[in-house]
Image (cartoon, rainbow over all chains, first blue to last red; front, side):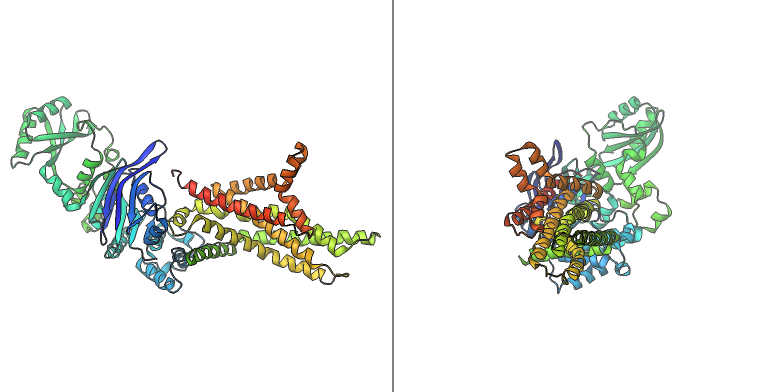
Length: 358
Length: 256
């Protein structure tokens, strides 16, 4: 349904996309996941026919985005990052306008507009001027305009941004309903979103697709290693020397320096029943004080971090505030997953991590 | 073809409804009617006074001609305020992305918008024309309707040309205020080109005379149906639409 092959996009001297390739089938929800500025919006704009690609091809329902733009535009519904709304129109007249613009026949229009209003729970505000609506309602009007002409492919740029928890659940359910017979591509930088909505995910980082896979496959790929987070006190050199002597330790990454000498490090190891014991034993015998040791689940968050922040030297110390160093943690902290009642009672980062781990 | 027509109609309806819902359009209409009718009355009084003073003048005809010539200034000041928001507002509300991803060409959008704003001007002119007719219908000797129709055709063509260029400026500007200022500047330059021609001498006189909006409008407002004037106005209208479609296409490439 949607095929993207070797897409490149260059803005002046900046390369926004490099060799982006993925595809999405009918009935599938594909999540485009990546940090802000990774190239998600650019990819979606090219698919929607808003921007031309510098190189490569993109096809929607068999039509080339560049060669047959009008055919493509009739077959996609697109919600940009900022919903394109006319503030002086009522919700209903706006949707009528969009459906006319999308080429719906006069007979179909009232039916389709009513359907979109029902689907997006806009009945209560259908006669209200758009500039009087809250952000959440505006976002839903934006989704309604993307689906009003019943397109086979729907592209949603951050569809749940600015919604309250109840609305997020509604929108997720709506997207799942829509995807029964349509292709949906949605972008997000919020991980629980992907976990809860998408069947497949394309992770984009610095304009490149670094992984395209089902969530289950991604997690399986990570099961050949076990990750620990250690909170310890001791000089950096001592710790590294000790880690080097342990054969099952593959790589490590410094996380923070909370106070002089006390640090957090994430260690990736080969699985072994005795691993925990070996690690604690080795560290303590080197004279390092171990304050906390935590086994990390192979959650989507870690896979994502691994894929999007892979640096040439993985042992480089990141001496930044915890939240800033970890864009995902920030995203997760600001948008806790909503399906778990326990989450609302204790929205600490650790619990959220557990929540999104398999 | 039907799709394109429906699209133009969709844009046309949306824009026109937008005008009728905005208070700005009513304020502009009020000012326009007040100034236009005052101008007409003052022209009639002026020519009547001349006749009373003993000159041989055809008061209704001369009043109409002077009124139509005077309308030039009014139109020039009122119309950019109608065209300023046509695209600048779309840009402000980020709705260009909706238009650019809908099955509608930039030409159709521009044409729909131009037709809507021109229709608004037509609606503004109808009461004024009715007011003129009310006076002229009782004129003795009766007025030749040719002057009335050709003069008003000229006014509508001039309006369409100004609005079309204003549409183009609006497609370039980020804000309505910037759009209106630039439109005034462009219209003023195009109107007063003949002055530059007079200063520079031949062959500029001929060239700038042909391009000047004022000169051609004055010809039509005197009741002379000169096809070269009609073609010039038509060219400005098409040029405005063409440049608008091109600029909207180009601006998508900008990184935002």
